[in-house]
Image (cartoon, rainbow, N blue to C red; front, side, top):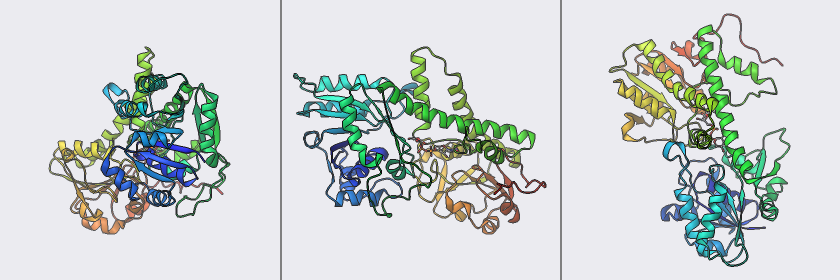
Length: 464
Ligand code: UDX
């Protein structure tokens, strides 16, 4: 059992704090926001993440997780400190380290014994040096070094964060201090050995054929680079799929079947090849921009990453152009968006494609209605009216656009949808709907990179 502090209780920090307590560590979470701290201490999570309320309540209830606003209390009660404060995109793509700097400035003076600081937040490559300087300046110095720094990038996906934390493909540790890495390896031991026993209501079912996490120990810069390269590669796969979608539309191919066909090659893999409105969220755009900015600092051109970002940005226009192709002027047209969150399983609207698509449609004079199973409000400047029922949102709509592929939309009553709409255009922005079922309801199906009608040459078979 280790004594752990987690600084910052956002999407990542709360999962790390509750997860480490659940697998047996003593965790104190340092959170300066009074409302957030008191709701978390009461077991209430102020954002949507499936399973996290149960995990949090179990951790707090076991007495192994508590929240504090006192840096002195947090430092006296811990030996390993996970830094998981937000590092949002700042000026021209660079990560904004203001919150991280403030946290280090408040913690430094309270160091009275050696701590290992673990940067969990996604920080620009080379930031570890800055973390050490900040801590040196803030702490009272003295003879023995009061801290060491380890990079431990997070690979949690919103919506599946608990499973990603408990069953990671890999745990990456970067440091030039082997003893510090040993201390963090001990914190991860229950996860590396899968030596925890949590009820199914708390720990999501582990995927089959999963042979456990791999521990990777490397240098600080390499660990930070692994994080950025991973997200940049995933974003590249998506933009590649979206560029193939554009070609498929012109040659009459189906990009969803192309994705299956190439994904069956083990060297490519089928994940993250879903064409559609492209990526959103708080990570891909931020991390790719930060990587581009870092390369620019060294005068290195990022031709591929620049194109990856351009393709993604253009995908949101694809939806608008398709609506114009079918409806011509959008002035006065009523368009209903199904799905607002940047992906299913979250309430996160950061860089959500739906908001940008809604803004553009409203600028073209359309009346934009929307529904989302979890998001019930959007910023006023989007011009989007949110409804609590998908059929109310679609009432008298000239077109409906599926933007986020929530499960509840995949088996939506299409006959009822057709009845409440004024028009009959259903634009599948995630290629997630059954084309034949849409046509069967008398609606016109339009996908991204897909022919409109089911090809006559039989269904695409996945084989045995
Ligand atoms: C991502 C990384 O997956 C995770 O490892 C990292 O720690 C944080 O960033 P997240 O941003 O939560 O996680 O979402 P993710 O599931 O990766 O999806 C990102 C975006 O890509 C979403 O908007 C999703 O709709 C989109 N996407 C995903 C596609 O457009 N096509 C795909 O095939 C997959």
